[in-house]
Image 1 (cartoon, rainbow, N blue to C red):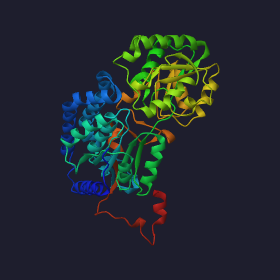
Image 2: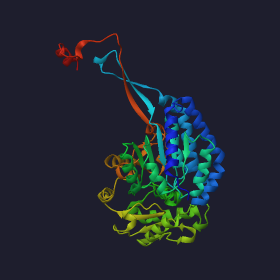
Image 3: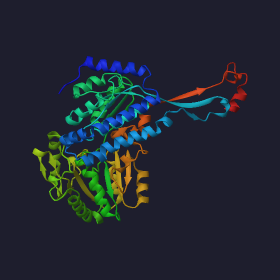
Image 4: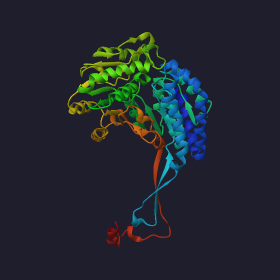
Length: 458
């Protein structure tokens, strides 16, 4: 693996700082041109990306389109449609005693941004934040993970042939390159990955007082209450878990189901497994693989931590772990103590809803929260709990709603993006007070002869 040198990174950083300082990225017409260029680049390289993601993750082109390509193209179109309005200074009310002054919020780009992405959705989680950076008027240094080398290579070519490196550039490398990048003073760092690495990013950013957006993860609970539509719940929960072979930061991490519904739900989920992926799941063209042997070795022992109700099969030579439902899982099990990030779903029965809330509260704030049952009760539970995002009677789908912010809380992240929030993530909202010169009452000036009048006005 080729690592960047300190001098190379310094040169790129200095070029981007100079380019941003030139003002070239600020014009709305320029930003729109670059977004259109990015969209065309995605379309031009789509077939190469499909081949690359199959090599790295065995992800089908259909799943890749739904979860990555379409997300990016839709986000670009959304920004092209709205960024002119988002960028305009916004008038806000002024206190009456300051008349005739005006107050406004200006939206100005932070500057040179660093975007570091993970391996699980390697295209979408690098390019989606980039859309926000372009839309806001920033420059960007892109750093994909080396865990998906084929996708990273195609993205590097796509960026290099579409943009000047002083504006947008993609750097390859591993931890040494990341460490050198984090020594530089960027104007914003956008990181998607684990909570462990998120703490490293935040610590490095603190040295320069650099703002950060951290999109992390956590143990996202899924609740199936008494009276839920079990056919719908089985299908949607399983889909949320098997997408990308469970390697999704908002995948249902563990399932809490009412005891009266538990056995029926398990049977329906097992049936759905066959309907979606066939009798021999390992041969399905629509089921992915674990990213590497290290992740496989972390996940495989979890198959033994409870009673396997469905799945349980693994093949290290193929990096294959079947979608697995496990029951009778002790609280001390590894799969209940850390984010699984794989196709294994522990199932826990409950009879009293307080058992659910107590269990959820024993974990850090999750990135997602899923409830199946009465919608009114679902809304009440969401009011009384905390998570990055949530769905009632569905899983994962909140990610596809551009008008919803996506982001975590505490251990699951900091800051949010998607749609307008992506524009705001890379934008400083600058408060501007604008007064006239012709009118200047003496109320505020020493020696405060009119303090009594001023006090009444205030």
